Length: 470
Ligand code: SF4
Ligand code: SF4
Image (spheres, rainbow, N blue to C red):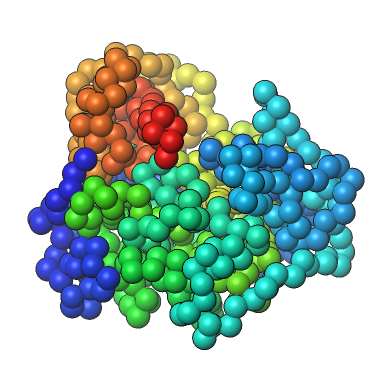
């Protein structure tokens, strides 16, 4: 794994993982990555939605967790009541985003719990949790603070690099990275979700400093956000997707491999944590973006945690010609209209399904056809382009084009790492930088041979972690 600072990518003033920047805000310029010119950008206008009839928790969408239910269908729950725990560590609790009745517990293949659907009462009752006065944050016992977050069901919002599993509450992190901008295309703007909520951001950062102890709390943001909230941001990150990903940021500022296990949390999740601890009630508000070329109303919505996708963009899939991508076009998943938002998701991108096949596709000029390899005339088309779900071909053998290495933000050679994984050469894959992979999805997107590089690397990382007992 890479241990040294790439000096050409970091402006002077960078304090590395020192507790404070040496001179104001640090600036990091990232050259590698890729910015997709995607049609259907959302406006920053916000529409507040009425609370939906149902809300849900989606255990299936919390990576690594093995859920054990604490409720059954027909049970009454309050907002913040315990729904399930993680069998690996029953102290990791997940709470109800609604007050009402457990209407449906839906299972998928192999009895995986997909959704716990709550039918909302007209007047919802809230569980009460202990609150922490802002002045007490600087000296509250760290273990007590972590226990409050675990009992309130929000500890899972803090995750640990490089595997991105839920952070171990008893460990002390080498750093905590807070990403104010979610790096994927079409995610809520920090300028929108932070509007009028800077007190909560301040409080949330104080919580992170207390949990981090002596370790630094890095607050990263893209230039527009960093300039707007300069009093909070420590690292201004410029560059294409996924420049401000916590793993990508850490890769550029860490000074030793001992810092690989930094924790990270998104800006909006930090507000949820702050709300819980400051008020003693489980937070319910989520700012969500609905966008994409097939979305009719592209904007920010103020809604509830666990809201139904149909409530956000129901009409957009009515004729079956479009598809919902939940959580970002590179890293998200396909969601059905009957599903709900998971704990971490804050975006729904609606894209056309696409034609099953295009006759003589390669021989058309392709003025509006998105392509990384610049095979089509669209390389001269500056406008946003419509992407659909058509993969346009099946998996083929690697043609050694190096596109995957060109875009990889952490300088991995994805094709070499992939081959090492297939050959079960664990050491070799680690030498290629497997653990630095930030799971951005770019290598899979640009690969003309349609090789599932990202998923393979992601699974190999998880398998390595399991073996190491991490
Ligand atoms: S290997 Fe692929 S998924 Fe991993 S960081 Fe590089 S481009 Fe992203
Ligand atoms: S992008 Fe795909 S085809 Fe090209 S080198 Fe990488 S793995 Fe091989």
